[in-house]
Amino acid sequence: MQANGGGGRYSRQVLFPPIGERGQEQIRAATVCLVGCGALGSLAAEALVRAGIGRLRVIDRDYVDFSNLQRQWLYAEEDARNEVPKAVAAATRLRQLNSEVLLEPLVSDVTPSNIEELLEDCALILDGTDNFETRYLLNDFSVKHGRPWVYGAAIGSYGLTMPVDAERGPCFRCVYSESPAGQQPTCDVNGVIAPATATVAAWQVAAAMRLLVGWPDFACAIHSFDVWAGTSRRISAGPRDPNCVCCGSRRFEFLDGQRASPVSLCGRNAVQLHVTAKRLDLAALAIDLRALGEVRVNEFALRVSIPKFEVTVFPDGRAIVKGTTDVAVAKGVYAQLVGA
Ligand SMILES: [Zn+2]
Image (cartoon, rainbow, N blue to C red; front, side, top):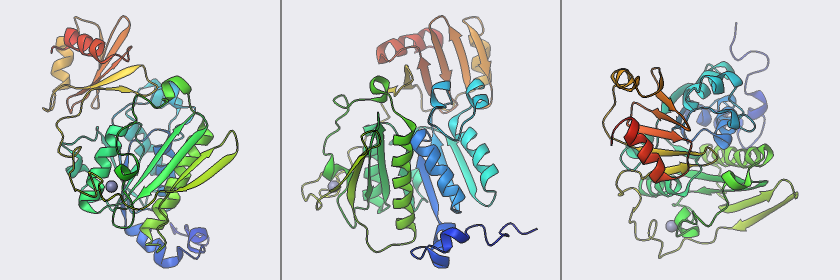
């Protein structure tokens, strides 16, 4: 039996002239890294896997929750019930879609201390994150090493996207010199609908395909749209800013930063803490915690529940404290359960 029978698995894509046989080979030869596998990431991952990408690394720090299922298309109710890490659940589903793709799921947060190792061999990076801090970090890496990345964000019914290739256009910090975090609406407050996230991800995948096949017209622009209002706009991202801290002065402030700071996770009523850089022995920790609350442990995570809070500890030294968006409260809960 031929895996590529029936007219060729990728025949419709190969018939599209800008891709063709040559483009398909370039797609097959490529390693792409997806940072964050939520709503944008799940659609982008599925599209790239179906398109026959050679290797896809899926990095995500979180686990599947029922509130994800409305828009995070790779996940099923069982993943939420079992609180499976998104990277693991994604890889399981993606393998069913295309066994020719080499999938590398990583349950991890991308931080200044691990980004070089995690993204080193990737030709292209797709942004599936929900925060500016990680995007600035991706941008620093991208500019420093000359690897393109594709920004995407969605809120409510609105979305925007922009490809970044600092050798051919402005970088992310040329456009957003300082983080608007805190002044921006978040999906905690405003919600988000699946058509908005799907549209952003579709634009990101199209940009990724153009970059992978070496399409000469880079067309660096910010595309924004509102799927509810039915409007869209293309804004030129402008020329590179010669005074840009990142691509102008080549000062990589985020890459050179210290360990990641605690963050409130968008839409999750939860805070992520980086507790230690050491790997943790979850089985041993589980024994210590049994007196304090209900403990569940598997190879990916340990979860301890007490009234109002649930703490999930990962082997890489991270923890997610569910039940608050206040970093100080989360640190207190963690200290009380696991120690400071
Ligand atoms: Zn720049």
